[in-house]
Length: 230
Image (cartoon, helix red, strand yellow):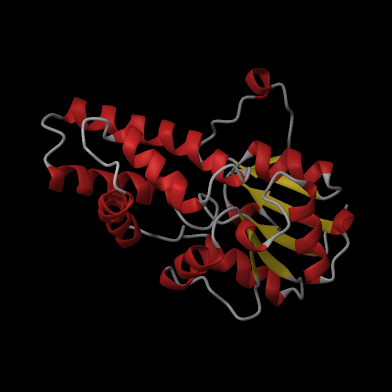
């Protein structure tokens, strides 16, 4: 079926969130002197992402605020530090955040994919979980922010992905029918299964060939780059 509108995920679809997190985290940890060996550094990096997934999901479900999830994450990450004071916890987390933001980079195929879709006359939106000001600033710094491409972030939506309301609200704002709207992103749960349940078409962006239908039990149409979204 032909699609007549395009929704794109942001983190790890348009912008290299994982790469920026790893680069920023390594720079931050080195500055704190917490990693004395390469193995120790890699251990800290993997532990950071485990904690990120755990606490960020809680924020998306509305169990805690975004600020509270950051405080919980930094306290779990540095259990030997006395971070009971919220201001101190915020200051320590801000050190990582500054390094992370300095490492933001757009993927090479991101701007061209948006440009092609707009040149073809398709309405395009960016549908992302997260805080609207931060996600908008991420797009601005990486050169992807466009006046003709609205940003739909979960902090300003009735719900976060994979709740059907997130996709349907974005489609309505674009003036697009869900059945003829294509959602593209790197998350099987948030960008494919959730979108399909809301009545959209979907493609999984599998840049590194990691999707294994035998392991996940889910067969989906995949693309290895945004250049393949024709």
